[in-house]
Image (cartoon, rainbow, N blue to C red; front, side, top):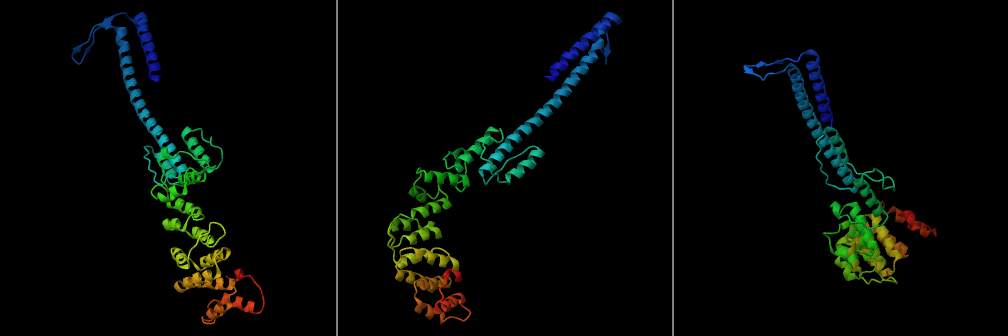
Length: 339
């Protein structure tokens, strides 16, 4: 556009200059000798505008060259801007592997920062940026948060991606996916999702099916299983050895063994089985002894308690010894204060 204007202005200038010389200076003709070459015989007015024409051509070449350089540079910025948009989209989506190539120094700095950053929408408004691609992703994120199911396939996200997990949770809650479908396909569904579904699954599943997916067992799902033993609804019949196998699958701390004993106490397991379970656990794992004592106290089985506490070091199990002493004095305190 600017070269066109410059060309028109230059032609007008050359025309006016030539007309002025021809009309007011001279109308004579002349032939010039240029490095041994005789040039055509032309009006002097024509020879006057020739240098101006040459200057015009040189300047046009100069302008075109730098215009081309500027176009190339602008194109780099445009490409980098598109890369930045993609980097922002991937940051919102929580992609783990992100790699973008930037051709300009400023966008390289910004792009590197975004590639190593997780972005989270701070508002429920999805029309935040005016950029169609970013706002589209923000809308998808908001829909997933609201419990809707969306199509995430175009984004090629991993199964472990949090948005993918939540989207599949939504599908599970809406009945689009069944527990069996999720549990049976470990390549398509992340273990964290399968373990969450397993917690629900064990609440009603048969013991055979619980065993089928027991590699997904967590403490939470174990508590659900134990709560069903001899329960009024969805009763699960398991012997002590079968329970022991499940418990030994997981690593429990002293506090967690006590919590397990508390869960068992709230369920329908008969006292003899409760005692036997924690007795066997304490025989194999010293950390389970506190839970065994807790169980005995809860069932008022004081003779076995005395037998254990009277045969340990003086410094051991001070909390349970104190609780026993208070009970002997008819002081009724909750055992929860001593564990």
